[in-house]
Length: 184
Image (cartoon, rainbow, N blue to C red; front, side):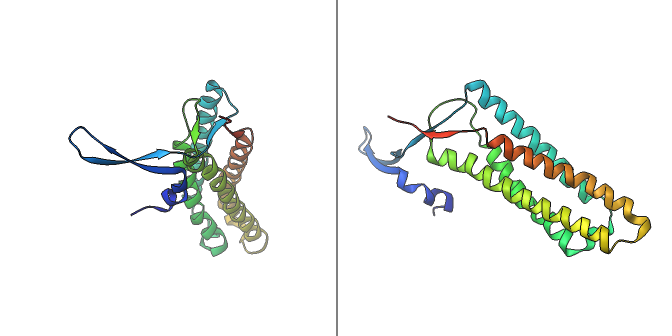
C-alpha cells in the first residue's frame, strides 16, 4: 500500500526490472525526475540545520512550558484549542527539520518536498495557531479575567509570545534558502 507522500512523487520514479545471475527478476525504482540544488555552501547547510534544530527546541520548550501554567485562561476553548492544535504543525516541523540535508549535493523532488516545503507549511501553520492563542489570551485578559489571577495569565503569555517570535525567526531563516532546479 502506498502512502500519500509516495503517491505524490511517483511520477518522478520509473520501475526497472533487472534479472540477477540466478534468473530472478528484481524490481527497483529509478529516479527520473528533476534535481534541485540549494543556494548554500556546505557550511551554510550545516549552519541552517543547526539553527533550525535550536529554534525548534526553543519553540517546543516554551510551548510545552506554557501548558504547565495553571492559568484560568487555558479553560477557555479559544485559548486551549489553539494551544493543543499547535502540537500538530510542531510535530510536522520537527519531522521536516530532521529530514534536512547534511551535505551539498543534488536533491530529488521528494527530498525537497518532505523537508523544506513541509517545514515552510508547518511553520506558517504553527505561527497561526500560536498567534490565535496569544490573541485569545489577550482578549481573556482584557474582558474576562479576575484581578488577582492575572499573574498566571502573564506567565502564560511570557512563554507563548517568545514561542511565536521564535517561529517567526524560523520562517525568516527559511526565506534565506533558495532552491533551484539543476540544469543538466
